[in-house]
Length: 252
Image 1 (spheres, one colour):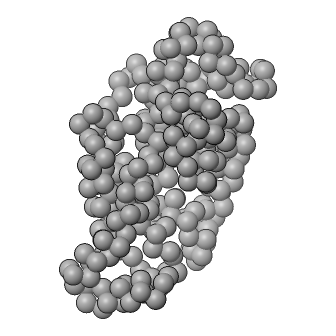
Image 2: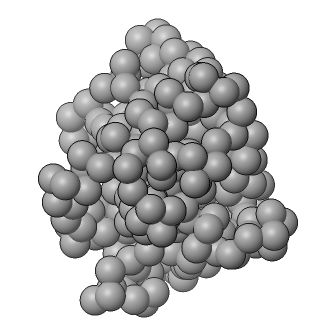
Image 3: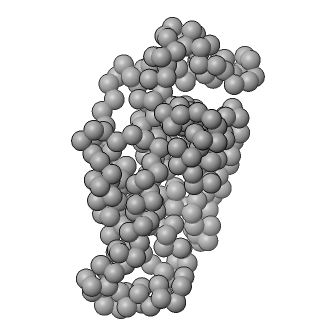
């Protein structure tokens, strides 16, 4: 942490004054804009980018109020979980998935799994659509519509907390110095499950997740690398998360 940042935090923690709080919000506002701008889901029509930033600021304020430097956790990592959580909470409240959509997604996920096991390679949309009894256009629309639900489902899993002040699974992953033996065990198990789940994905889906989550690229940037549209990347991301979520089901 830079000397200036340390001074800002020291001044705020000493008195918890509103002026210091506002300074920290302005300092970390770019972090909010970053997370609001790279969500792999399409917000509903009644929510725009400014709305998402507003919800993200609520998460940032919560992070500022709860941050404890003595834990040795980087604030940006700590705040990122709450910023994303606040934004996704807003999306979750505005999201409604009819039972038919859930059933179709489950059926398509099973088709992907069966065909990949039988053929041992990436399966074309045409093959999946035929096996699922739908058209290619319907499949792609289904994946795009299901992308948001799949992401929110995974986030529900990662951000599940043990009580109001509890630690989320995502924070366990971000905090390798956690002294809690039970937390360390869960951290190791979650890492193992994630690695195993990602290993089972096909090459393209694994690449999309790597570029998005590890390289920090946007869907548009990933599309340029793969030579496909942003909408197609959204579909690939939704498919990857849908399948990855299945491998993590034992941790629910």
